[in-house]
Image (cartoon, rainbow, N blue to C red; front, top):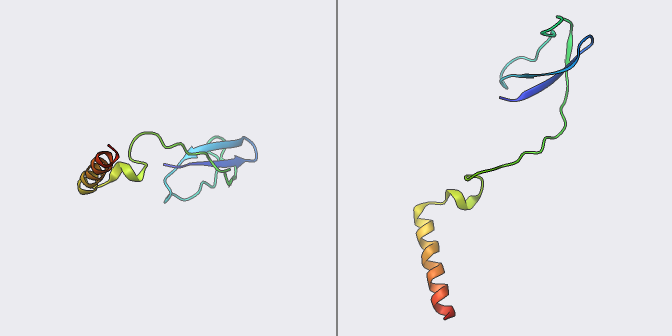
Length: 78
């Protein structure tokens, strides 16, 4: 779920985790005062692990063909 930033006139800036489909908050959860939804800055996303590159999710046919091609190029080099 995304984290949204709001600004309360009394409490200051706070963050809350909400579903994208949820309505924006209108009142501060601490004091009950009115809040304004802030537009956040760009966030640096770091993708770690497998599954983020096109080579990670190739079909088995593609992988077999790639192995065959590598084997042929090595044989041609010797």
